[in-house]
Amino acid sequence: MTEEHGSATENVVSRRRFIEGLGLTAAGAAAGVIIGVAIPVGGDEEGTDDGHDETAATPGGTPTPGQPGAIPAVVTAHPRVKVATLSELSDGDVIDFKYPSEQSAVSLVKLGRRADGGIGPDGDVVAFGTDCTHMGCPLAGTFKVEYGILGPCGCHFTTFDLGRRGSVVLGQATENLPQILLDLDGDDIYAVGTLGILYGFRDNLADAPIVEGI
Image (tube, rainbow, N blue to C red):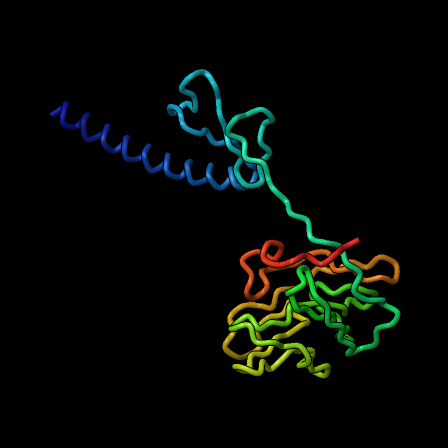
C-alpha cells in the first residue's frame, strides 16, 4: 500500500511539474520575442555539440558578432524623391507620380483635414498607390475632396478613405491602399518609403526600374 501511495504521489508531482514547465516555456518564448534572446542552433540540449555555442538572433535581438549562427538584418533603402512643394498646394490638390518604381502609380493629396500619417502643419498631406487592391484597376482621377476618399473603382466600385491609412470604405477590396511615406524638408515634400506592397508587385523594389532619388 505504501509503495502504491508513493507511486501515485510521484505521478501527481510529475504531472504538476510538467504543467508548470509548459507555462515557463510559453513565458520564456514570449520574453524571447520581446527582448531577443539567443536560441541554440543544432547540438545537444545545452546548445553545444563540439564546444561551440552557435546561436541565432530572435526577432528584436542583437546577434553576437562572430557567432556562426547569427542572422544579420537586411534593410533595403527606398529612393528619396522630391514630389511636391508644400506652399504650392491647396486643399483638394492631387499630384500623380511614380514611386518607388517607374511602373508604380501613386498620388499625393492635400486633404484639407488631418489624416493618419499626414505631414505638414495641418497633417493633411498624404500619398497612396492608386491601383485598386482588389484587381489592380486604376483609381487615378477618382479623388472626392468633399469626402476625402479615392474611388469608386471603375471595375468593382471599391472606395478608400485616405484619411484613415487608405482603408476600405466599401466594395470588393479587402486590403488598404499601400501608403507612401512622406518627409517634409523645409517647403519640399519627399517620398521616402512605402507601407505595404503595391498591386502587381511581389517586391516594390525588385520588379521594375527604380525612380531616381536624391
